[in-house]
Every structure is written in structure tokens, then in C-alpha cells.
Image 1 (spheres, rainbow, N blue to C red):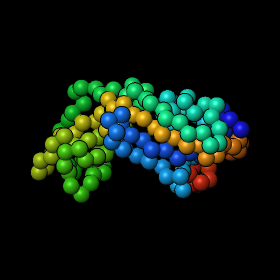
Image 2 (image 1 turned 120 degrees about the vertical axis):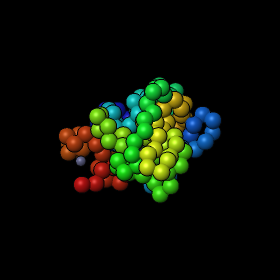
Image 3 (image 1 turned 90 degrees about the horizontal axis):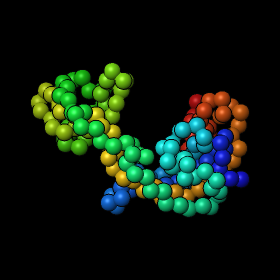
Image 4 (image 1 turned 180 degrees about the horizontal axis):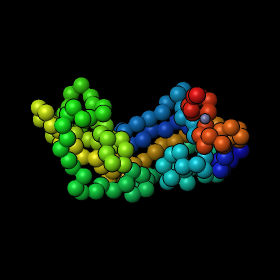
Length: 161
Ligand code: ZN
């Protein structure tokens, strides 16, 4: 079976910046599943996987614009530390935090931390970064009617209710 709309795809991957730095991975023994054609993964990756099948291995290069977007200047702001929704133990430059914005909760990166306030950048941490996914396709199957109505994959590597 080939990957098409309303198939469930199980795959493992290594995600690297084009500079070689690893960002994320899903190991072959702990793969990820998604419902194809419902924008559950980055569109550029979904398009590259279209038509693929079990056993395929491919490298997918995505420019920043096709991945997490380009960096937008002026997205730095100072917020009280107590207003952060989620933060690591140490607030250091580059640490990830979560803030509530008018558009809802957003991931942000620490630019500078003070005693009571922190300067954050609400660009996505991977904004402006060109990425390469090295993907291996483990399984392709038809989605169940329930998965299609939910808009996501169930089972191993997918959603659990
Ligand atoms: Zn569901």
C-alpha cells in the first residue's frame, strides 16, 4: 500500500539541522504514527512522504519557511517569571518556556533571565532553521473510520484515548 490520504503511516526519523546538529528523533522501536492528509505533521514532510511505502528510506530537506517558519524580529518581550506557564529548573539563555499570549499558549526561548523577569523570544525555537528529516517508513495501512472522524491515528505511536 502506498501513502495517500486516509492512510496511517508509521515511521521513525532523525531530525537534524542542516548544520548537522541533531534536534529530535523517533527510534525504530518507538516509532511515530500519523494520519496522512490531515496536516498532523509538517506539510513539507507530508508531501515528501506521499506515495511512499513500507521499507522506504528518504531524506527530506525542508527550508525554514517550509518547516517552522522564518524568524520574525520584534518578538522579544519581558515577562515576570511567575507568569510563565512552564519553565525548566534553570532559566538560562536558550531554555524553553511556555507563555500565555493573546493567541494562546506558545513555546518561547529565554534570551536573558533576571531575578524576577525574563526576556523571551516567542519565535518557534526552530524558526529560521533549515532542517533535514531522515525517515524510514515501517508501516502503511488504511485508516479506520474512527481515525478519519477523529483526524488522527490511533494505536502504537498515535493517539491513546
Ligand atoms: Zn482519536
